[in-house]
Length: 80
View 1 (cartoon, rainbow, N blue to C red):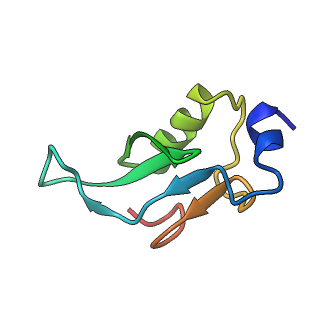
View 2 (tube, helix red, strand yellow):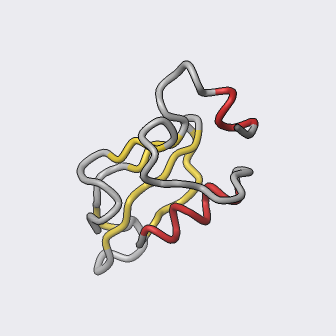
View 3 (cartoon, rainbow, N blue to C red):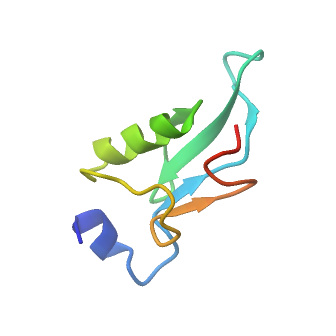
């Protein structure tokens, strides 16, 4: 278990992926806001974007389907 996982083992999942919504800069594209520990880290247009945000947060091989790590609001990782 790495540092990100250890710090949040007893709390809600440290990563929140919000429901699909229009992207604030590209109205023709939809995206999902991604937060790590309640801080916005970016907008994901696909599952791979979420994985990349988690790599940048320190996870080498993030499992975005792990409910202890990621909470998907408004649909799971297949919803875009």
